[in-house]
Image (cartoon, rainbow, N blue to C red):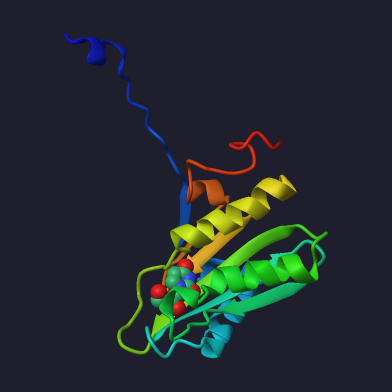
Length: 170
Ligand code: THU
């Protein structure tokens, strides 16, 4: 046995997600939020990818803030729907905690049947809000129709986090 293997150990990280067969299995409040996310997909400006994402953010004060992806001819200048919505929620209601986020994605080119989770950058942005508010944010995501997946916290989608705590700021 070499020196390295004597000290090496493996960590297993587990994440828990809940899968619903359709929006019909959600509570009426969650279904309404997801329907808003589905409807706002039509506001996406996605002439390049033709991939349209809609997001609805529910706040503790009862407000719902919407977002859709907004692309740009300079591709990296576009913004995902999740960040459009969550940053707008932070702008409009900085003192209200975020309770849940619903995400729905569809494409003009193919049927999006797999539930579409937030991309890595959006997970990082959502984590910043969750860390600041010290309360988990539930994330519901789906494709065009069909199954809905729920994460109780962004940590179930981003288990190893880099945030203020990493920088020793909290
Ligand atoms: N997109 C989102 O809006 N959210 C995600 O989490 C992943 C991707 C958008 C960005 C771009 O406009 C299109 O989907 C294709 O990547």
